Length: 239
Image 1 (spheres, rainbow, N blue to C red):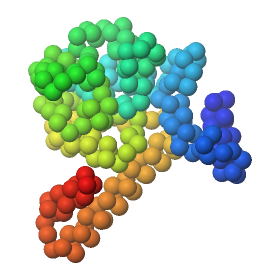
Image 2: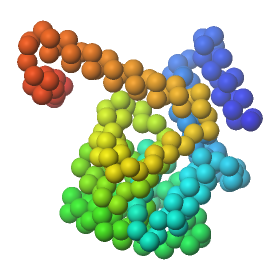
Image 3: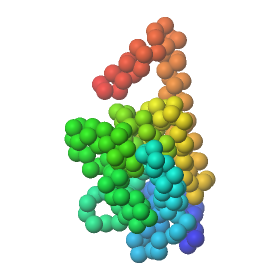
Image 4: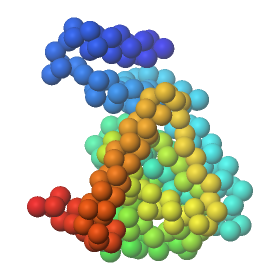
């Protein structure tokens, strides 16, 4: 509560122009709020592990689904763009999730990070293991586990721990979701700071709708097919 009040106090100072934007701004405050909503130890590693944190709620959900679907070797994806593993010994939620799932009884070999695959070949080998049910829990960021992630045949659940910053990342993750939802899986949008969470999803949604609006205008103006329009926009962005 003290950290949350501190964020509110910082926001008031920013709104009242009492702080230099190079020192603090709403982007920094929102990012810190995102960390707090995920796990307070991302703000300060010395803080206690909150049993009701978003991460711990996710772990319970993932384990329950893993246990109840063991006969079918169903698989799950966990998305988090924050606190990815760096291998530097610092606290991160990826290692925290794996360690706690192993303590609950999940074999370590059934849990993998997309970050452990450092080449296209390794990534395809990892996806093959997920499709076979040898790896049943795969964690990754939107950028690394978006388009091209072909693992949906045994997929039973998606777990979103945070919201991507960029609308393009939302689009990328939707590729996986559209494929997977056809198999009747469940999708868990885990949230504690609901107002902040809704604000960021709303922002991404607005940007995506704005992009769709621009596409429709161009299609109407040029009288061309949507595929051609998207190719034109992609080419202009690359130029």
